Length: 288
Image (cartoon, rainbow, N blue to C red; front, side):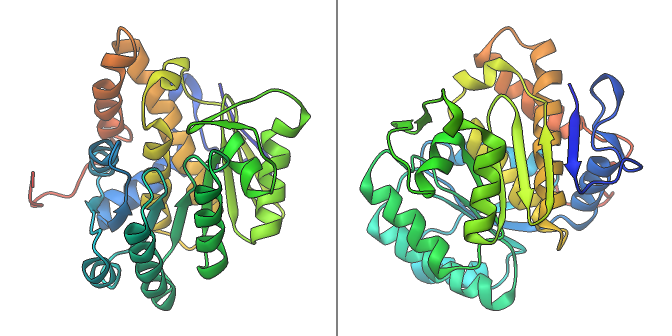
């Protein structure tokens, strides 16, 4: 499986190498993260909070989760990226997200939005659109049902899962429409992932079917998008690199796992060891 650039990434800088390698471009992102160790402020949902933290740590970044408004504003003043996840929305959390987002916007650090469950309820739809309208979102990472809901279509999300089938579920077209309407990079994930930013487009063909049985796989992908956005101003390339790294790691993990239950710890191991030619700097603190 490969990363197929449609427009944008140069063929001289491949995203994925042979036999499951992450390639030169994605490898450079891993190296930058491990060198700089960015602080990523996650508004993770309560279901997947630990998974998000573990994935962030596995690639070499530092996760922090400040949820109360005052705490969130101060943390956003120090973070290198802000990731907003709507998996478990409440009025208080949404208020804190908007407040932290305003600080992040003033500092011009990237804001990544995961509209979990958009299309399932009017409350989630309104919450996602409110954040998009109020904040300069750098990247929206969504499944096909969520992407369609943000574009005003309904009936394509069951709970927080996408219902697929039909031309309206074309991930490439959804990504292009999202990017155009909201003026951001759009990453629409599924069996094949599609990333669009302005005139640049790429499709990513990495991953494993067992991910469909893992709660929070999408949240983990979004976390990596936030991590990679923290080390570059090119959010399109960051999103493509994040999807590539996660997909390749999942493929490697599946070779060592027996099913979804053992895939997650193997995935963390795979993320930790990806790009071994770029080890973590010596002398850093270990653990928490």
